[in-house]
Image (cartoon, rainbow, N blue to C red; front, side, top):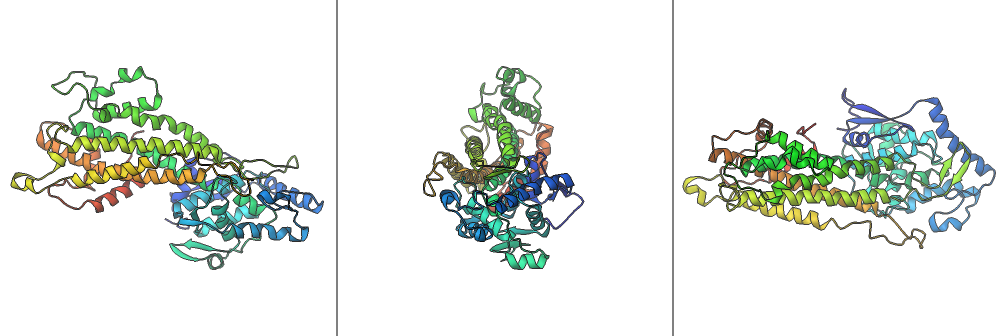
Length: 519
C-alpha cells in the first residue's frame, strides 16, 4: 500500500521532540501509518530558532563547520561567504557514488522516517521547511532510490542519505507508484517545489545514522516475530516427534531465571497443553537438544530483544548529526553523534541470535526426516503409500535446501563492526560499519525466514503423518488451530511435488506476520 492510499486504519505518527517507538517506523515503512509534523507553534518556533541562530552567525562572519568550512578533513578550508549557499549542493553531489541494490520501498520509508525523527529534535539547525518537505514526499508517495552500499557508518550514512538530500532538491531518481522516474518530474507532478537547502541543511540530512537505524527497526520487528514463530514450530515438531512436554515444566525453568527463556518455555507449555505430568509413558527419557533445549536457544534472542530495542530507540530518538546546534543556548557543539556503534553492536548481536534459530530449526528438521530418530514416521516424511512409496522421496530435497540456507546464515554472523577502516584522509579513522551490520542482519533474517518456511511445511507434514500413524492421538487445541491455518496454505505431500511456490507463499505470510503468536 502506498502512503497516498489513506484508509481508516492508517494511523498518524506525529514528529516533534516526543519519543518515538520503533513500531512507529515499522508502521510507516509498511504503509499502515503516515508521518505528520507537529503543528504546535512553540515546537515550530523552537526548530526555527536553530536555523535563525545560524543565519545570525553567518551575518556576523562566524566560523561554522560544514557551513563556512569544507567537510571532514577539509574543515581547515575556509569557504568564501559568497559561496556558502552552494556548499550543501556540492555535498550531496559529490556523495553520489552509491552502488549495490536499491533499498526496498519499505526500507526507504523507514530510512526517511528515521531521518525525520532525528531532525525533528530541533538540534540540527534546519528550517521547518526542510522537515515539511520530507513529509511532502511521504504524502505524495515519492521514494528516493537509495543504493544500499557505500556507507561505513561514520560520519553517518553520508552516501546513501545524499540520495534523499538530492531528491528533496528535485535531483536524481525516485520510485512513484512502482515506476522509476526523475525526481524533478515526480515533484512537479505532485506540485512540490524543489528545496533550496540552507547553509547547514545538506550536512544535517546526510551526517547521521538514519539508514542503519531505519533498517534496524525493521530487523528488530522481524526478529521478534521469528522468535515466536520458531517457538510455535518447535511445539509442532515436538508433537510430530512424539516428544516429552515435561522438558518445559514451569518448576524446571524457575531455577534458571532468564525471563525471556522462561517465556518461551511458557509458550511451549501453552501450545502443548502441558499439565505437569512427568510420566514417561514409554517415551525416550530425554529428547534431543534441538527440542529439549529450544527455550534456551530461542531465549537468548527473546532476552536480548529488550536491550536491542533500547539501543535502537535511543538512536532513533537522538539528534545524530554534527555539529549540534543549540538554538536556546546559542552554541555550536562539535562532536561525533553520527557514529553508529550502538546500532552496529545491536545488529551484529541480533544476527548471531537469529542465525541460531535457523540452526535450531535445521536440526529439528534433520530429526523429523530421519526414520532413525523420528519415532515411527516414514523416511523423509514421505506421504507415499503402498507400491508408490518406492518412488516418493518426500522432503529429502527440502532438507538439503534448508541446510544450505542455514549454512549461509551462519556464515554471515561474522561481526561487521570489527572491520573498521580509516577513511577520508584519516579524519574518519575509526568507523562503526553499522550500516553494513544492519544490511547483513536483514540478509540473515531473510535466510532464517526461508528455513522457517521450510519447517512449516515439515511440521505440517510431520503432524499429519503422526496422526495417520496414531489416529488415537489428540492434537492440543493451540496446535490444532495453527494446523488449520497452515492447512489453508499447505496441503499434505501425498505425492512428490514442487514446493517452491508454497515456500514463496509462506515467506509472504511470515513477512506479513499473518499468524498471531502468543500475547
